[in-house]
Image (cartoon, rainbow, N blue to C red; front, top):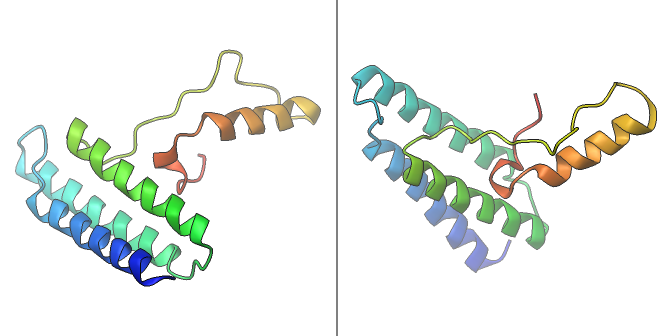
Length: 121
């Protein structure tokens, strides 16, 4: 990892924790605020540790872009949880053969940058 990428990642890490510390839930309920703060911290720790061993500059750049997008979207909508993805029309196929592969390709194409680290459920 280059020095500039390292400093960018560390500044993003600090920004996420600063955001979590100052976070206020949209509902205004103290319990919701604490739950959302814990979610932000847990999610950041999990994703940063998961990507700690990355060496490829392109992969690091994508992770940085995803982190920045998730921060901005969370602050804009006042919701720390990932926004749902929507499949194209006729996006659900049966679980067999060629149609399944086509559906997997469509889902991968429909997945926005801020959800690249999440597995499909």
